[in-house]
Image (cartoon, rainbow, N blue to C red; front, side, top):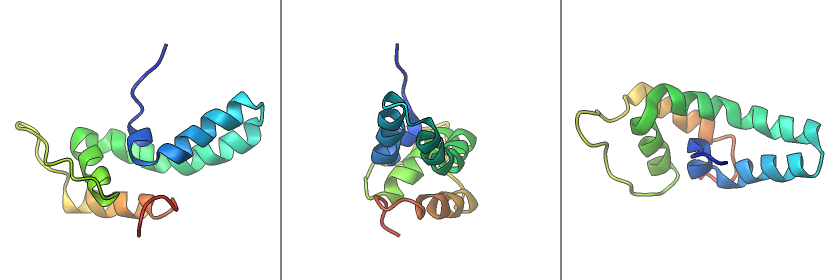
Length: 93
């Protein structure tokens, strides 16, 4: 079993940390990291592929623009993503 975890594309270290803490039985610590990831995950769910591409661009990855019929994420969404990503050390501010 598995899945494609959009936040893991952008903040892989944080998502890996949730997994490692859970496997170690440190559920309270895993929950704390999960709560840090949750706002970003919600934004990625809200903005879909355009939001994921915008978040990756903010993280320094040139992934291009969404293919039609999808439009790029709106400026307001990009600002929200930038704010959510600022909480992670792995993302430059």
